[in-house]
Image (cartoon, rainbow, N blue to C red; front, side, top):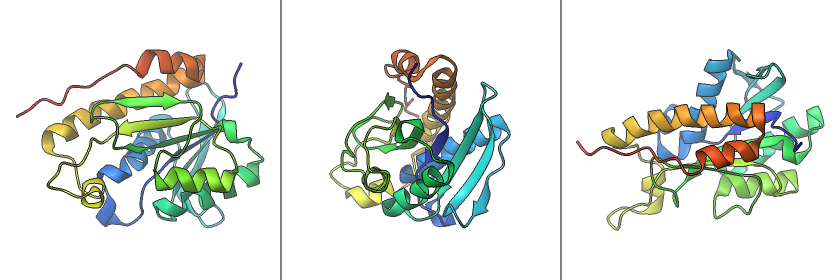
Length: 200
């Protein structure tokens, strides 16, 4: 049996001005898990983020982390938790936004490169491995009228936001299936799912 996630990390930027932006979808997904599993998140200076310890859907101990280091230094916070609890990289699960996936899609993988994502670059560099599972949530491409930065730091359109709420539910389900039956099973069930963005 492959190593199951023990530390689940949602990537994003701290500060209220970044709330609910595309780039912070990892934070939103982690908040959903924390709420569902009743794991309170509290500021933890040692771990440079909001951190919680509790039990997952399987009854096993789980750690949840939202780094408050800003996206491009996420790895510092992750490394602090990994070192403190002596966790292997493969017991990490990192949730983050992906422009290459359409809004309404999610993709779970067991390892891989950073794919240009600064939060994952930082994580790989600090953990010293790219062999850790990650769950990417589609935020769609920026159009020609909008540069990449304003796209990722912008908010979802109302119709997209409706789809995103469903995607966050699917994300939680996928992670719970992964914890109960293994990540490969969750990949086979959820990597093909698409939530339709209904035009208004």
